[in-house]
Amino acid sequence: MAEMDASTPYQIDLGNLMAYNPHHSFVSPPTSREELARECLQEGTRLVQAVADSLFNLPSTEDRDGPIVQLPPPTTRLPREKPLPKPKPPTKWELFAKKKGIKNHKKDKRVFDENVGTWKRRYGYDRVNDDNDIPIIVAKETDEPGVDPFAKRREEKKKRVDKQEKNRYKNLKEAQKVGALPSHIQLAATSLPITGTQTAPRKVSKTELGNVAGMAATATASGGKFDKKLPGEKAPKHEKKHRKFLPVAEGSGMGSLERQQTDKVLNKLISKNSHEILNVKKAVNVYTARKQKGGGKDREGKSSSTPSKLKPKNKPLKKKIEKKGETSRKSK
Image: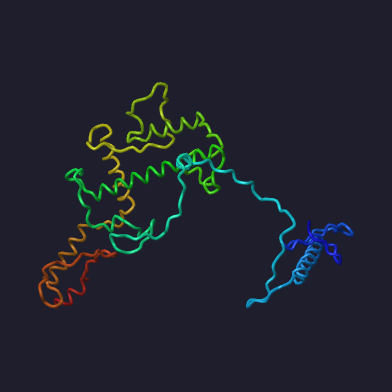
């Protein structure tokens, strides 16, 4: 039981650093949540102060960090949060060792490696008798010719590791039957190849099976059109639209659609941009007039090998019409 202080009505358990007031009661029931929180905070402050006063009354020893107090053994039995774990069943090796009277002896972590001449770890990285540290393997009379001894050692090691992992899974299965799996294994039981979950597997409905079968039937390039149908299997439903491709060879039927589509596109382009199309006849006349006027030479007087690009003017060319009066004056 917790100690009862004569001066205060608190029960104090210094082993658990806990205090309790069994005679506490509200003078008047709190009317609001804020009033209840304020009353609880005041009572909690008194309990913490009582624990601190009891600690300072204990004998202490001085240390460089300050006074140190030895707490008494706890007097209040606190409940356990989770139930006690069940004992795991013995493995096959443990049963065999108990039957033969084999006892486990603690081995040293460091072992002397004669190949290198230094002390190394027994297991893990840079361990003793590592395959990477053996440059030469002496051949035996029983070895088959043409077999790589290093590859053979790696293969044997891989087999031993796989066997050990298989035995570990068997031990976990046996532990699961009695409900003695570790907590971290129970959390990851869904990803392990063991029956770690207690819930029964959910049965797949008929609709889900039909959806999966339909997806598998339409997964081919032809969309299941040329696949062999099972007895009682319905035709797959095509919810999306099919793309239609034009035939490669042009013909009178579907082959003529390509020409129709091409003509349609060209007519649309011409009708939209008809005002921007170059007048070829007018452009030739302009080019001829410029060539006769310039003599085919550029500004520097050198004949140009390549003619300049024609740029059509927005305004049409206007021919200069001389007036009759001006011509008669010039003739006089």
